[in-house]
Image 1 (cartoon, one colour):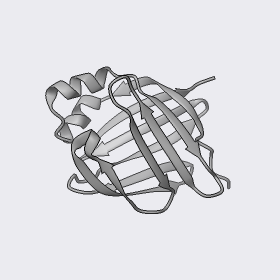
Image 2 (cartoon, helix red, strand yellow):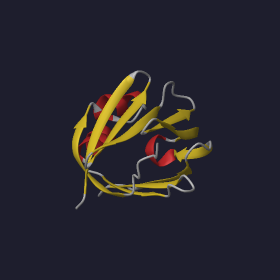
Image 3 (cartoon, helix red, strand yellow):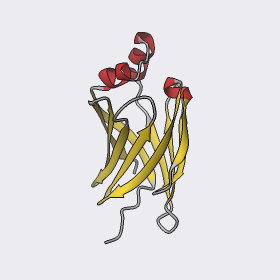
Length: 138
């Protein structure tokens, strides 16, 4: 079975439990409040042949870039987010992209999946789950 192509631009339309997730990452109160007000856009480039993927998360406050190859562990620099680095692996579980981020926070990672024109993101850390839904730009 072929894997879905995530390439596209997606705009956030829903968000749930982000404040609790950010608090579990030790993000200060003021920054949590700012982040919860942001409406990020994701620009994804996905090369199905090589597994290379680039995810750009763009906001009016700060941008975050993540470049990786599916199935290969890499050192992820999360210092702009929460001051940490971690060993990260993104792999396929069926049609979902599952990220495991090994570092000082237990159970950290995320899952992306597509449903029609919507991109779902579930972020996890220390048993806390936050969700975002993005709609693909026309």
